[in-house]
Length: 466
Image 1: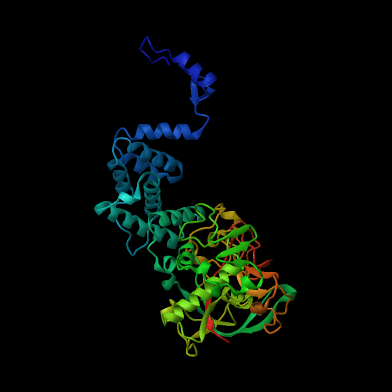
Image 2: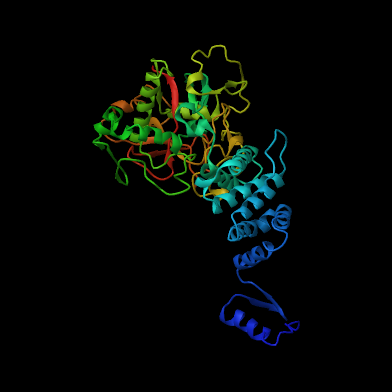
């Protein structure tokens, strides 16, 4: 205050107004003031840092302390475009000036690419991007894929990267295209099912389990093909008087398309949720017919929901497991698995798909702070012995098994859902983004087939018709 030589400026009066009337600053000591809200401080810092040496200096600050300078960097990008849209590209280029290479990536590189993507999503009209700018977006997309695979950033940041990947354009065909979805081989054999006093050994025939839950992009291929209007796909719902003329009745009312929950739930690379068991079954009938007609799937094979027997074996592994996981699209599924190399399962009674230690870095659970679904592929290190990902966490998954007691007997009627004349409890597996340490290979929940919560989806299997 004492440094002001302008007679028209009255610092004391200004300080009094800002602190007592506006509440924008608070006194911390003698002639020491600070902002009560960090957001306003960050905004003013961003304004200052866009004036000189932009964007080099702000990027330097961010790379030294990402958590401290993150919001300032994003605000600076938003402010800079008021002068010219070219300024946001200067910032993005400074943050991410080269493509990722097949070598270890530093945290500085990963964080910088992450914030470059966030800056674009928050400021740019992606429909108008062409030429060199499109190449830059594609480069950043490759970085986002690295962020998902590297597992170096916290789960909440990987989830954000997955959301931005969807907005910028997820290039993964196995996530976005129904015909390229991946299946993991689960060989036949014995395995341990259940836990505690309910643990028992049982046998499961070979099948191929979906590597990921079915995504919005994949499910909407069914919708776009008129799946809701074709009664041949809805035998189970018709039997229970839940489908009529393209309308399915779920727990939360009638609908002719999946429920819209808003982003990030509706992003194309997220698992589809709000899906009744009837819709999941209709999808499998449609996909079986589609792939039969296209000669992608043998006539004596079908696409269906996993039984809980198949689901748990996919998560826990058998007494013996593959020496190396085998994943393939439907065109490359191996129908004769006799000569597959196996090895002993070091953890045949494992609690989690990845081992016996709970770890929120390996699954979308409550402790991650995500609190929504996440793009599939955000937790690759949480894969099961067969390569299936996100079997625990993210969403609960429908099965093809009725709720009955252990020991599990596949011939006791629990698998005869095609003969179910009225709604009964159906087993759910996996647990969701708002569950805690209950997530494990043996978690069993249940719902009526018309249940369609925003954390409920499904994955599929390919198997011989027995």
